[in-house]
Length: 428
Image (cartoon, rainbow, N blue to C red; front, side, top):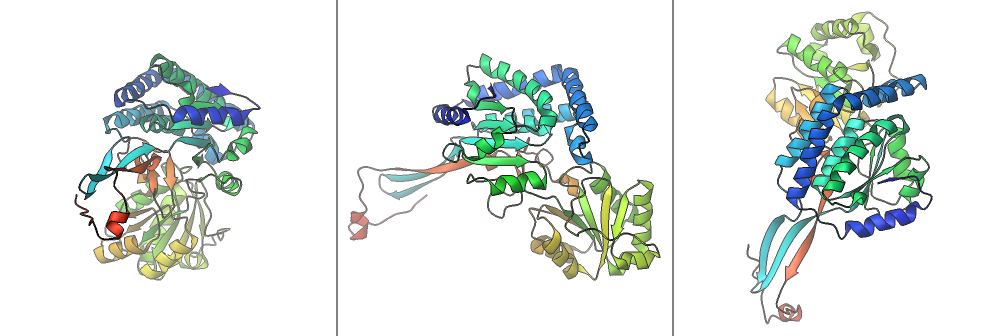
């Protein structure tokens, strides 16, 4: 539902109440997802036009490059969203699954069953494609979503929400399952509702994520930075290695999984660095580098402002390191625990890198841009979490479910087991 309402607290309280009484059948959920996919394909040109208008207006206001790139919707992105929704249809119902069953004793049965998390607040900057993915996962997991897109994408997201609400209404599903907020002032009100909102998911800049983390008691899922690395350890195929690095940097530089720093092993630097820099120059990538790189190439590169910087554009940092240990230490010190990759034919070094690099996604000989729920085959994602505890990495269906333990007995009492009258069987 669409609200600009001073009494947001009562609205959220009502959403929480309705969420506890609403359980969608898998058939209904899949039909809704199917119709959303069909409808966004049918209306794709209208969606593209609205996105273009949002982009033009944001650009005139001086919106930064990375945000502008995330704001764009084109035919390929719309088709990707539609395919992601259809992938969700193919996934078994994640709600009501029995994850295990155990007989504690005769007639005393313990089961673990999956449930929706409940009411989830989602705060986005730009990203109308992420808006659609989040809606899809929310429907599949029976979670009630309160969504606040950035003002720069408000028109496109309002149109998308209108499409979805028309479909939901036909299926006699409460419109409260998806609520759209419009006013920026409502974000602070949303963050105060820890009694009725179970989780906040921010999708945007470091500044946005940190603000949310610091101003709410509601659990927050997500990541603040996307400082991703590639460590060039050993070179077997020079051209393919260069292609992999270019893919990680320029295929979509505004993405949080784009590489920001390339570390080059001292042992291959003299051979590989000139080729790497030449290729970056060809693609007009701005290079920042340490003194050792500048000395090696006899060219004065500016030092990076920080080794922890997320550029989000056609910029990159280069650094020479003295082997695997220094590379891992650098990544664990300055990285954001998002996605880091090693280029090597040495399987021992690759295994050490993947074991000791403290990131949600660790890769061997592949682009950092693979860190994505759709590319992982999850259908869609609500974001990437760099938390060590679950969920971690691209967060999709499983990340938006919780569980309860069901115990069914026949008037069993603990005292019988405490005094030895009965003994637990604990059989599966």
